[in-house]
Image (cartoon, rainbow, N blue to C red; front, side):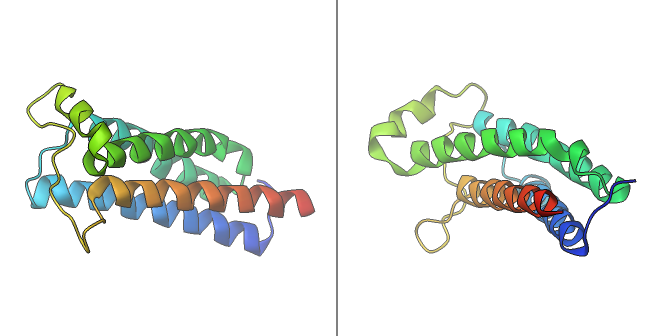
Length: 144
């Protein structure tokens, strides 16, 4: 068992909640709404879903070292989500979206809340929140 402050435990729990909500959201869009994930969506899922387990185990064991792979996965996930969002929204990248393998092009937009919030945007925000909270957690652990 690690020696964590209450603030560190709360940060770890917040990270886990964010990862769980992102996973649940992606499953909602594919399983309930029937949106077929494109290739880049699958890459984002591959990076997000393990975070639920990684941060869950870290929270239960109260050991931040267990969660280090989460920082790496969320960092990579941020860039994949940003690229996917640019494929959807930036005309210079739009042509690249048609090259995704599978039945759905990566430039397809299923949802477009407020004219800019798409599924990759939501995933990107989740990865950024997880990454920043993990950095805050590392800072908190260094203080003690």
